[in-house]
Image (cartoon, rainbow, N blue to C red; front, side):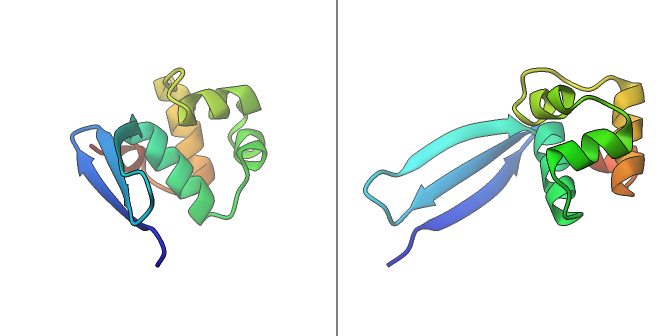
Length: 94
């Protein structure tokens, strides 16, 4: 039997629960903005490099945002939203 993954949102955090394997993990992964950028980027079929180029930001910035090492400025968030074809508010949910 395969693992079951459940994703829930609690405020700005995402809780990922994995069951059906030897170890069950409950942990907070990333902020809402970080998850949203990654989710929308993947839905658009873009790599981090593609998004960085289209938004006019560095690849390192995209990586840092998605790994919650830093947060995008308002200007960068606006560029990312435009590159992904979504409203800025969509990326800041939570």
